[in-house]
Image 1 (cartoon, rainbow, N blue to C red):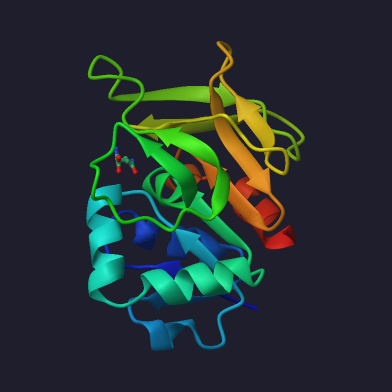
Image 2 (image 1 turned 90 degrees about the horizontal axis):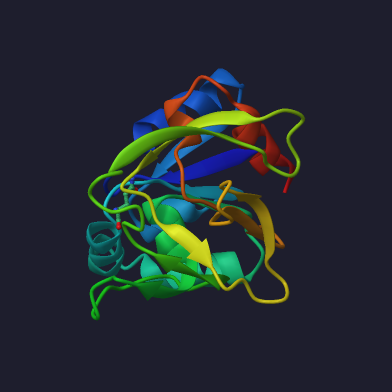
Amino acid sequence: MTVGVLALQGAFVEHEAMLRSIGVDVRQIRLPRDLTGVDRLIIPGGESTTIGKLMVMYDLLVPLRERIAAGMPTWGTCAGAILMSRRILDGRPDQPALQVMDIESRRNAFGSQLDSFEADIDMIGLDAPFHTVFIRAPILQNPGPACHVLASLADGRIVAAREQHMLATSFHPELTSDDRIHRYFLTL
Ligand code: GLN
């Protein structure tokens, strides 16, 4: 199995390192041809406007959308989750995005006071809480009927969701030493 990590901008090196540590073959994706032979994809955190623009610049937006629609398991973390959501709130009106998952994202939803924080998340599919970090994180909201909430904060705000073969987390599991969500993704 080869997992592609979109390597245009953001925290892709950390995803690669975590995948390698659990024995997975990893490939950086920068051009459409890099997708050949890739079975799964991670879209990392970073800056969603920049990643979206680079996807257009490198002709990746359409091929990625097609591969995901055809069933390639795909996981977006933070900016990656924003790019996967059907609608981006508080984004730039011209922000290019994949829009493959039936859920909305609200960018930078925790405001400047809470730019970055850590929390213990109870996530469906995991045996025990997951301690993780949120960095200028989005929240997810209004999931469609096929989209299942996997984790919320104590106040009910959604931070992880799954729709068939697609996973979105508004936090950064790759910045921890806990590989359970990476392993979970490999089961999708
Ligand atoms: N705030 C960023 C954005 O809107 C996401 C931050 C992150 O990926 N850590 O794209």
